[in-house]
Length: 482
Image (cartoon, rainbow, N blue to C red; front, side):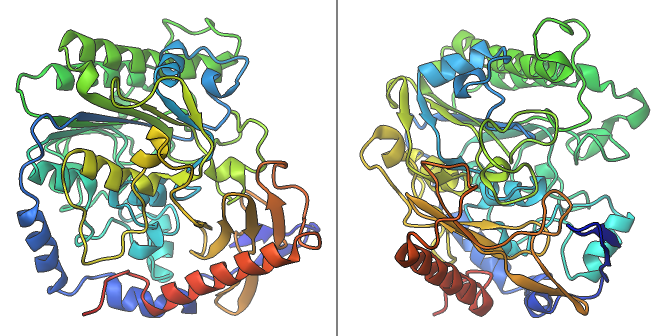
């Protein structure tokens, strides 16, 4: 594989095994049988959710940048429904995806763990039989979420929630790894991004709309119809809706019924389509008279691609600068969360799992490392911070290459081995070769290196990053020893 270097050189990278991942992959790609009973014991112990447990709606956009929403300052956006949720709830300004790429980001959201715990570094869930899948296997990477990972919908289902996913899955396309086999009682949508073929629409593991019949310009409206049907289903128990959008991932397709209605071109029109989906979901909750007992979360799987907006952040999807990692985070729960509050404490999508379980009265699993923290104290204003450090991983070779605290971010790309060639991560597919840099998160967009001005902070963060890497080398899967 040829990659252009920063000085117009061309570097050839071999696809041989990566020695930093090989040993871990050998012991973890196929989980030993004794690990699955641990999971079953936990799920059997969950019990029913609390009386009055809230409904949960997670609206996840695909490649929605930090600057793509009106509530986050986009002057061309037409997102009144999302903006109303922000005005009526809590908006986070330092909220991060778990990866700057689609699939590993979803692993973190679903498990409450850094995706490296499942060796999910790259956009690993490639179509079966594809060249991408073969290359990933050659590098000891996996092509589906592992069976012994405990996912949020499995836990909520065990607690009596009605669970459904509408939209993109991207966590496996092999038998046994469809969403309705991994915790979702109902599933409708594609298995991967809209730029991959075949782009079929599945219902519960069976193709319902074949590639040739999929009109992507009508996809958001189709999701809207399915979401409303899910909400309006009869039943008094709580429900979990995972509204996982296909857009604004490229290629962009705006609904022709509304094309040209915004000043943002095709991309702006498409984002307005997404906002109409949000408005329909909120209207359905109101009609069922359950809006006051529904926690609605709006966020994105990573930063934007090359067409939409990252605001004033540096970098884009695919790297660990803010533009690739920081995403919108809006939380709306009438009567339980304050209105119109902006929180600047750092948090990550891994933090959703413990927060959602605890508001439902469910104890998170204890036999494995859960990297997340309960998000609710930050949302309610009881604390200004829930993490001492957050770590960012490159999606290309799996290294923890950045760490931040409430003030500084230390980005130290590691030298990783790929065959016989050493290169700094990430590979320059979306960003250039990088040097270590210490930045002040609140005063700069990660452009100015302050290492010589704050050497003690640089040393402290570097020590934390090295210690975290060492912990992963010793026990990457995060299973607690007896």
